[in-house]
Image (cartoon, rainbow, N blue to C red; front, top):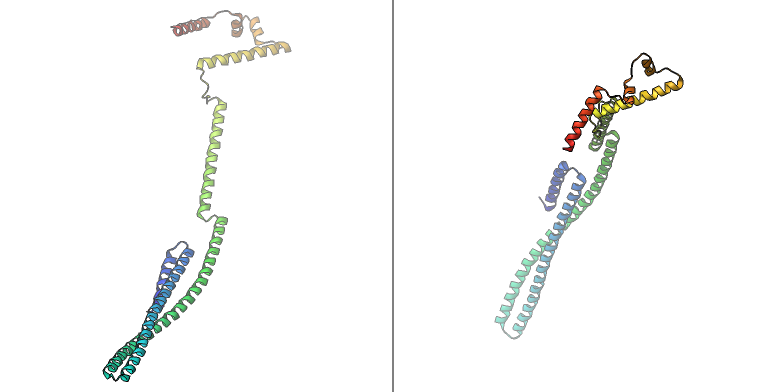
Length: 276
């Protein structure tokens, strides 16, 4: 399996696993795209390293070729000087250098072939990345459109979690409002009937009874006045003709009764207790 095939397999595997488990596939598409770009950078780095190594071998080859020419000149000079031994040494060195040049040429050719293959795969990977980018943007646009449509539909139908929460909040508010209204009506009814006394009313039962009696006496007195003005005979007048007496008239006349004596006695005792 070549570099491009391995890279494609890895990217596809990661893409499938990530998209299947991701909540937002658009982010995973961007991640996969960046992964593919990283793979491309690795391939480009490999080509650069290979090219550098090939250049070094080519420089070494040129130096050996220069040495070959140098040994040729040395052999010619030795022959001119009738020094065959030196000429032979120069030719032997030339042969060694030429053998090294052949090895370098073979290595350079292999590197060149590898470089050509990497360049071809790099171009193919770039094409795949460009196609993936186009498909990625298309998929992102479709997903975002579907997501927006879903949100609108959920908002309109109340199927979404947020709308369900809103519906529950409204329902709870309605129930609490009904409970509060019922409580308010009950309190109003109790207060109107006198069953519920005000918390601020600290009067004793005796004081309340006395005040009620005074209020009733004032009302009866006002009714008697109205009757007299209208020429209607009052119950008190009738009672007087019959020899009876009205308790209110007795109170107004200031005539003491047994009940008044008892009350006065109790009040005196209370005043003595407070002074002590």
